[in-house]
Image 1 (spheres, rainbow, N blue to C red):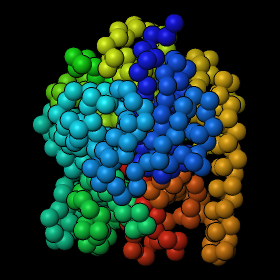
Image 2 (image 1 turned 120 degrees about the vertical axis):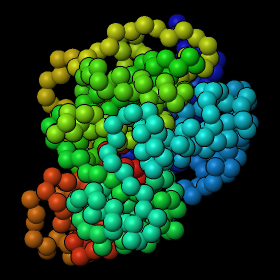
Image 3 (image 1 turned 30 degrees about the vertical axis):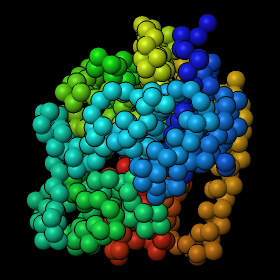
Image 4 (image 1 turned 180 degrees about the vertical axis):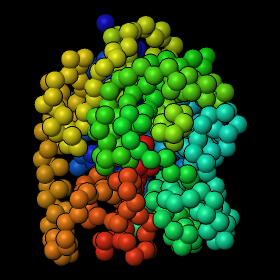
Length: 451
């Protein structure tokens, strides 16, 4: 008998067009294996997710540039088809922001955590997050929000080079703009040039202190804050391998106890009154040893299935249990468990995993998505390589390392190298400067270390 109330379906909402979003598949499998009817509102027609045996129905998603009101309209149509209350699970920041802002319009058709409607938007906004951390006493890289080109140049001089530049609301970046959510700035001129794109970007530019990557410095915490505010399920994890190296998504993660990271996560969510699923990214400063919060994602992180405990509880199941007023089982953390994204870290699958391992795509009880992923990935990489050959970039001299950039909704694949500061591999240079490789600028669909 399932611990979950299988009479209550789940609706996964994702606006991001990336067909290789493995977090969506993780949520489909987690709930489907427990007997819950799973509906997916996403652009999954060409995605391996649609091959999962646990998907009950695919629904057309909102347009990539849809307003929150338009997103709510799509959800209402889906609710009418399902014809009974469902647990809604936003899978990207834009979805979480819309669900929070229009919570009153979505209930009772959807079950959602009870919290201030603007809170998801507040923590997802990277400029607002700096203020949130300051108020809560949570370490955060020094962040400046310039109000003019002169202030942008002055901020660079104050912070020292290199500087990390971010758009505060990356989900608003227009597709095809060539603007990236996060870039490395290496001169005051680059910061000024970025600031001039503020109107096009749709949100504020912020300039942030650069914390160098290094061994055992990148950590994350996934959790679920229940109706009482207690953090349940999830736990702290360490990035064993990132793609791109030093600044990318988690290709290999390990469940690793870390009382300092856990205490920071619980203190922050408690002071904010946050309710629901969250994904935090931290980087440890090599000089001070302090853990700085880099990102607060008010939705499941792509590798949330790493934290499935001895009772089978993860953050997605915790949400469903709590919103249907069912008790959450007391499982034992499985420290040392690994999560591997095969297409980014294929060789890691061959190494022993004595404490257990879960793969992002391949599963013995659900083989379709894994097979479809490798076929789609092969075609995608081959197509990108052919495009590069046609552009003549194959004739360029090779470089020792290759960063990775992506467009909104596009998977990470190797791209021509930008000139970059040592130790900043994987974070592209600011657009419109002489260090660019000559390939079209590509914008990240999320911050470099947010998965």
